Amino acid sequence: MEEYLGPTQVVESDSPIIQQKARELTAGLETDSEKAVALFYYVRDGIRHNPYAPGQFLENYMATETLERGSGHCEH
Image (cartoon, rainbow, N blue to C red; front, side, top):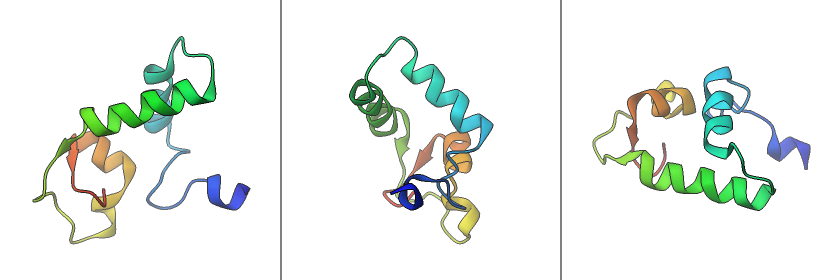
């Protein structure tokens, strides 16, 4: 299972910026379920949907890039 839960080139769960945002969003929450829901809602409601978000390069899909940009399409 660890193989599927670790960071990748695009899912940068080891990035300090991503980790800090996750800590902010889950502060005060106790269960993994509560934390997962908070993270889900942030992505759903906090990252603006933009069908014209850049997608020419792999870097355009990286979590840090999407977080910084504040918008993305389904793949981002």
